[in-house]
Image (tube, rainbow, N blue to C red; front, side, top):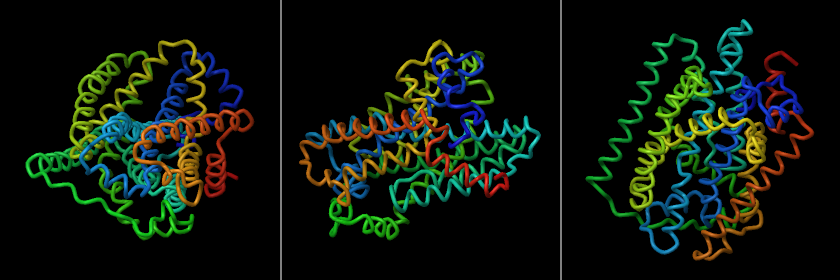
Length: 402
């Protein structure tokens, strides 16, 4: 995520020139950075509802199980637009990043996975710090473990990689099917919402929330375990699509079918089940239909930037977020926490239920503006984002390259 999807030898000025008018050979890199930017800001579209809930992730999960009334219908619809789609896209992008790193190692005559375990270890540390001090819904720890496994799988032959992909996807689909059937034929009444007393999100200090995350680490980390098979499959699929030419002109047929599957088939099912299902099919949509929509987004952006000669203003801003993806991912959660949680401005606890939807939309736009503006001005002066810089220096030191 730090350097896996971009050429570290391209200077800042060169990158800006490439973003304005990318030659044919660099359009692929522009699309990758744009996709990373979309994935980062898209995950904020899901996480922001957690931040603006008075009881944080606990309240968010409880609310998913309650019947929709009043403003909750609008909230469900807005949540469903982002739910799982950008998590899936981010996961696919990590797999593409691994394929790029492997290709770079092979062209340089280096063994693969070589020193990648050091990269995975640093990402695991980043994720652990992010989980403890910033966000209990961190994905980086899971990506570190998944990436380490997939890095060794990519060192095997095509047939072995295909078997790993099929087995991982099958395990995930079997679990989803079992959950879906149980939900459909043995529905359970929604449990009463829990009340946190004391509530560390609204009333606690920064340290109180750290302790709360550690005390509930098993529940908060359960998603990482549940989606492990899906993550392995999406990592491998991302690497496979990259090698098959998803970002090249000859991948037009592949992009067409991915867009049909994502937007023509999966998206309608996802929206209907997610909005009308009153939260009953949350797991099926977030981890079933949403990743297919992610593939449609990937194909659409790749197709768009193969046909468009210039990136434009929006594309340049997304590219900057993508280039500092790790910094932006951590910072956006930190900024939202400062605005919403009790140890910061505590705005979430002050908002009435009737105002929560417009409040959340406003907080999202504010945080996104801060992130996009920060990435723009930072990268005008520095080659890497601040977390990427620290990550790279740590890797250089541990790998003996300092």
